[in-house]
Every structure is written in structure tokens, then in C-alpha cells.
Image (cartoon, rainbow, N blue to C red):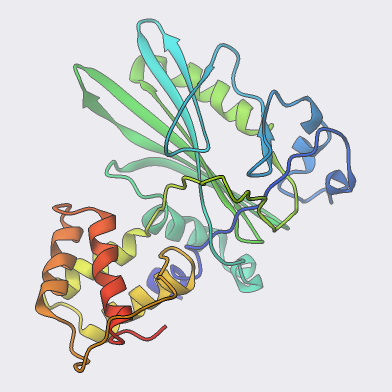
Length: 297
């Protein structure tokens, strides 16, 4: 099976809520669970997120900061340079059982190439498979930034029920090995309860960072330059909507007598693919296609 075929299966995620402060039935996990080790000590975790249902203990010496687009954000003064640790999530659909029977290298390569979206090459990657999900690890190549060389590491917890939690650590290259060891030890304390129903409040807005899979942006660029046709582009858009990566308003009043995709949409797709416009502008074009009845979902 090619990476292109399995990527749509491997790019979804759903989140849940409510962290428990004591030992509960959620912690009665099988030995091959992704949280088998973390569950027994989760009540001692120093950071608990009651809205998104997870807890963990940050590395010693790291300070929590405010963040508008991450679930949690921590920093550390590393000898005059600042190291950071951020947590994000993506929501979508549960993983099918067939994913767990694929060769591990196939899954790892697909996730590294299509899900762990970064402009930097991956120089190290690994994966652990459990009965209820996967744990992926990637180290990215060093890059120069503001007269220092920085390096980053990312750990992704991808649960069978669909939830994805991304832990990302960035620091200067000189202090990377020490910070990486502390970062990995901290992620070993990460624990999430099993509930699939998010706790939301009418007066509470949830700010979530949407991660659109790399392969969809590539498709948009290929469609814009004529490499692929309308049907292939539409399939990618339909996948984004059906998997929850893109929200379409329920009350669509626009209409169109034509089922042809307007030229300006294709131009937008090309500009989005090369970074000229952002995700929001591209999504507005797609919403127009759905509202006009040109794309059916």
C-alpha cells in the first residue's frame, strides 16, 4: 500500500476532557496500553488540564507561560537562550483496526512524511505501537535563527480513538541533548483519560491550532499547476471536511448555477501552496465551493 493511500487514514484526531486526580477505573489499563506506565503515577502530575483531559509533569526548571494557540506552553532559560515546550492537538476520527496491522516502517514513514509537518528535514525518527495507539518521535535538522543555531524535537501521541497530542521542544543546538533527555522523560508522564466527550462551557471559547496535512497542500499546488485534475482536488477537500479539519457553516445561503470551479479558487490554491496566503484565506474559498453546491459533502 502506498503512502498516498494510507495518508488520509493517518491524518485524523479527536480530543476529550476531564483529568482525574486519583486512581480510577481509567487507570486500570492493559500492560500494552500507551499509558500503562504513566497511569499509576498520574495523580502526582504537576500540570493538569481539566478541559482537555490530560496531565503530565514538565521538566524541572521549566516555567509555564501563557499561549493563545497552544494547550500549554513552557519555557526554560538555557544559559542565556530560551528553550520552549509546547503542546498542541488535532481532532478527527478514530483510527481503523487495519492501521495496526500495517508494517511499522510503513506507518512511521507515512506519519513522518505527511503528518509531522515541518520545513526542516527529519534527521531521526522512531515509533512505538500499543494496543490503543502510537507514539512517534522525530528530531529535526538544526537551523540558524537570529544568530544562534536551534534544533527541535517532536513527540506525537496518536490514540486509537482519534486524539492526537503533539509535544514540541525547541532550543539551541548546544543545549539540545540535555533538554531532549528532560523533554522525553516529561512526555513519559503524559496521561489522558478515556472519555471521548469534550467538556465545553457556553461562555468558553476553545482556541485550537488546526494542522492541515501536508499532502493536502501539495495536492492544492499540483491542482493549481495542472498536474492533477479537479476530481483529485475535490477528494482532498472532502476529506478535510469529513475528518473535521475544516468546519463548514450549516446555514449556506449562497448558490451557483454552474458546477465549474471558479478560476480564482485555483489561483488561491496555488498561492496557499506556496505560502502567499494562509489557511484561513484558503478555507474561505472552500467554504464558497460548498455553499455554492460545487462541492458536495
